[in-house]
Length: 430
Image 1: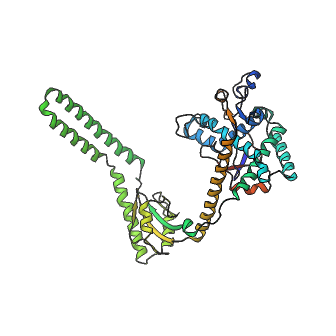
Image 2: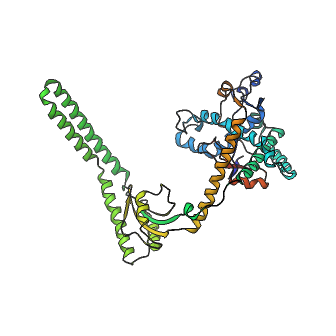
């Protein structure tokens, strides 16, 4: 079985399993809660289920990719650059996610949020389907029961509705100047060597030269020991050897490739500027070359964006709608022919306005939760948390009931427990 995920309401979960669930300890180890909210222990079955459900989504989305690329479980890799395994990062961030779920429920009445009869019925239906879709072993490991799954889905739905109400408080007015987007089409020529063999040969020659240079340096150093008068000459010889090595390490195949692709770009630009071919046709022709070094695309950006490169934006700034840059633009390792599609792209600007409003809602929601978190009591038992051991088993996930809460999908804060902060919602299992 697999779970299907749609962008929207955050997949929220928390790491709060006892050692007996994940590490094979006895029932006695279950007495100590990992999380305590306002003086009450958070239900172990609920937190276990929430954690396993989140783990399932992350495993399904990223697990196979990391396993294939790195040859090991993603949970053992340092994905966040903190020097610790992702398992540790995941667990350390989990508490905040659960706390927010409980806080949303705690403050639901402040926003007149409650579940409708239809929503409650749908939750029951989805929970039943989830239990039917998973085998007993999986359900036992997840501590999944009808009551627990319904409780989890209830929290998800309440949080979505609360977040939707919070989001209604943002300013939805965005000026054209703030959101203005420019669209520039391009033909990019990136030098590539023709064969890997040529690259390997060039690298081998470079390594040989470097070895000779290093040997010469060692010999010079030995000579230094016998005559201080030779010191200046030794330094000069070492510098010369290094300069020669650097010169020899330049890849002749890449040098030739740069000349080739630069000339290709210039020839195409000359044809466009002379009127022999329109940019659109030139772009189509470039796509048909079947050359990995030539590609086309469109840059869409605003005044405060740092992408594309400064050279490209500076050249584009001189163009009016429909114009082509009068010279090839070199940026990084590539050569570009630029065509100004629209200095002010109305459609892209409208999309950007929606994005800005979306970001404002996220910021407002985050600020409200931060305020709540500062006023509530949340405790984590570090020892109990340290006992948690993740596995790579993937389970199915229940869908979020289709209700008016679906509108909250656009404003719900992203989960903190995914490698790249997932913005996902649970949908129907197969």
